[in-house]
Amino acid sequence: MSRFYDEKLNDLTTYTPGEQPQDLSSFIKLNTNESPFPPSKLAIERAEEELEKLNLYPDPEAKALVSEIAKFYDLKSENVAVFNGSDELLSFCFQIFCPNGVVFADITYGFYPVYAKVFKREVIVLPLDQDFRINVEEYFDKLGTVFLANPNATTGIALPLCDIRALLESNPNRLVVVDEAYVDFGTESAVTLVKDYDNLLVVQTMSKSRSFAGARLGVAISNSEIIKDLNRIRYCFNPYNINRVTLSGATGAFLDKEYFDKCRGEIIKNREYLKEELKKLGFFVTDSASNFILAGSDKISGEELYEKLKANKVLVRHFKGGRVENFVRITIGTREQTDVLIDKIKKII
Ligand SMILES: Cc1ncc(COP(=O)(O)O)c(C=O)c1O
Image (tube, rainbow, N blue to C red):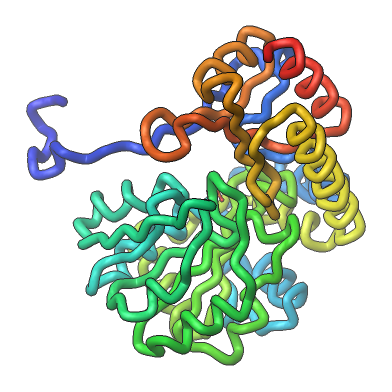
């Protein structure tokens, strides 16, 4: 740390992103839950149209994109705001909506504890049960803002909408943030509850099901008061938080529903195929509704499997320490990539 660094911030822990190798062509990359498919052609066309306008700032209100997303979900523009990735949005949530602290699971998205620390939030961590499931009733009497990844990060397991509804009703004066990064791969979205519950904020991203991770676009869906709060804090930092190319490309991606459905359908098919193949090899596999699975076997440790797959040019994710140490998280790729992965695993074990 330099001598200019504020020592009050000495104890920050940083988030560790998955590896991003420079030489992409030599790896099958199944480690950061990206889509294996390129963005929709319409998204690329729309993005390209903006290149010659990069001398001009983007629309700080992102009107065209916000309106398209609102239409997609049958809501009004006042119910939607967009951010530079959902990470930016989540950081704002920890900053402005958590005066009574935060509550989240022990196994969940790794950024939650990082943001809690940056913004000095009191944290209650509720352990998942033995089967890596959330018991929603444990959250009912907690006062802090709830952060719920649904489906959950790392496990891929989803909570039904009735549990989300029960959580919202258990304390109408506490905000529940439902992080739906993986919702398009097989879970019911809580967006349908936004009209009924003013203590619900749904967070989505275009990084997974819309093949837009490199463009960075996160979406907040909530009642108009919460959206106004989020825009207020956004205007305190960077009203031009989303560049022109992303804004326009993302609008194209939302318009191309056919491509969106085709890609996520393919991922769901490949996920179920991979689950079955790994089970045949004696793996325990989580009942994932996401674009990844968590898999482990008595025959090999999570770390060894990760290392050996990496040596075979297949990147998956391994989390050191904690309850998922003996597992690897595998992003669902194309059918071809999945077959290579299965073949390598068979040879390794
Ligand atoms: C549960 C969850 N939420 C949010 C994010 C962040 O997504 P992004 O910042 O790419 O929109 C991720 C990324 O992997 C995630 O797993």
